[in-house]
Image (cartoon, rainbow, N blue to C red; front, side, top):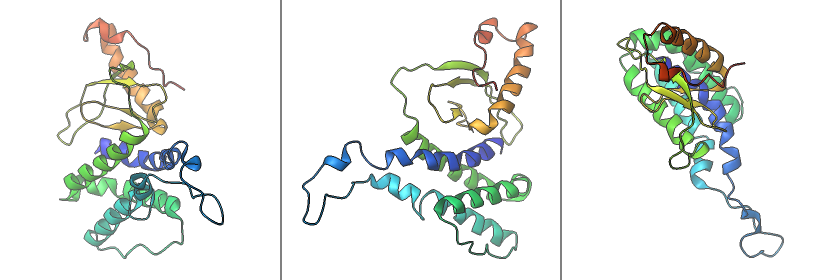
Length: 210
């Protein structure tokens, strides 16, 4: 569930990161001007849908509604917030439910899969990588699955990336988690110094220290 928490925490930032991609480059100059003024800016419909009421926020609010029903809680009252405010409020509520989800909810698996797929679909737009791009090695992924097994795949940082994402388990680490991530990587690196891990894995220091 640690990966699910990281995916949830990344959603508001991913939502914000979609804004520059909403209008195609050069869109303001395309098309023939209609009577009464210049043509409106074209938009990328997929991104408009993700940023709209039925997109990212719709998925988050859908799960909060299901969880409230299963926990016999009253429906969430309308808060009069915009889409961004609703998204942040929904993410905060889901994070608050995480201890219960992890130990008590039979739908924890489908929930985790849906949130991961949502984050991945947005990240594929905001964090495209050039073919063959290697990135800077950070260390081993510290994510733990539901059986208690540590992932251990190599994490890499790609310049300009909004998150550090594990290529194996797809756990995403947004900037707010980087300090904790470095601590976990440093703890793992202690084993390298004593010969428990191949020395070549210590070749790079973590660039996300702060």
